[in-house]
Length: 430
Image (cartoon, rainbow, N blue to C red; front, side, top):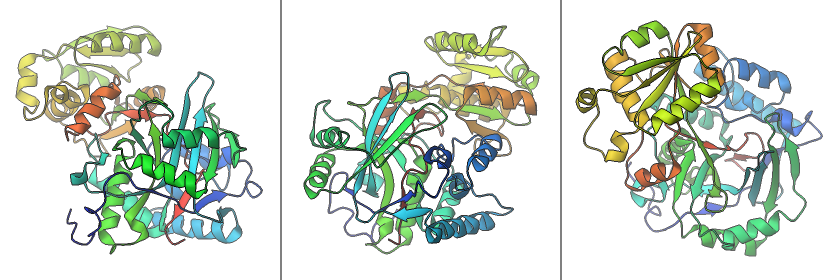
């Protein structure tokens, strides 16, 4: 990207997190805060999940992040009108002064995550400050950019991680004493996670956080398309402007480790028998007459020895592993590190999708990317397609590849827990 229009881009170093006046739901104007939240836009399982969220409350955030209309232009205009209406009616209100926000999630299984929500300066890849680990799909970036232009808002934060020293560093110390105060709100969503939010407006606390983060680089854990969208929109607007920044949640994973899960594929229009027939002589295929939990255990065991996948959609599970070495040598690019060449996602995209099944990875009429395992299987069975279930990649592999500047195939990982959408928004015209 040409940085000539952004002379300050190379003058600063380090992550720069800026306070902003958050837009938040007025609890007195909505049924409940839990009822107006949503998972991130790309996690909502459509159409069932979308309809469920729309029906949960007339002001659910899904009406902004996934507006429904016949054309893209109409969808974006509808989101913009909805946002303006909610602001005029007081459904959403702006906090009186700029701040950063401490966000906490925890569940009944001992998962506790705390991080800081703020407006992060959008940087160039050459600065090495915000590291992607996955490729993006241009049509998704274009879709998100059009929505942000129409609404002039960052409607949901993306998730970034950094590695502190695991002790009470400046940012962590501020977080820990902030959560001793009463939160702005506390709510529990139907997935069992409780959410709490605090604002930080004290200049000393803000300075400590900003000074600490300026020493770190961040890994994009979730939100590659939104980060690419921020970069596109920043390039469209003369600097300085509010578009120089984008809404993020930053989590120190030395203090609060994330869970890493796989993102599965649903192959549309490819029945399981056809998918399996194409693998004959190229992969080992074993039919498993076990429930989903047992099939995932078998997948985990097989993944320890090499590339492995589960196919489903015909009422059974099929473990696919032991690819022919000559097949991999012919189909997997050799210009990347060994850690990339041996990724399951690499073999899936370069060998299975491109070479064997002839399915374009960016054609939404042929392939869908779904986070929920059971939902992927259910949709495959219902639609007559093939579910390809993946085993998750370790975080250290992801981070090391990102540091080398090597991106993984798109939708390779799912870090979590992801921030709920609808808890705090950023309007760029405030």
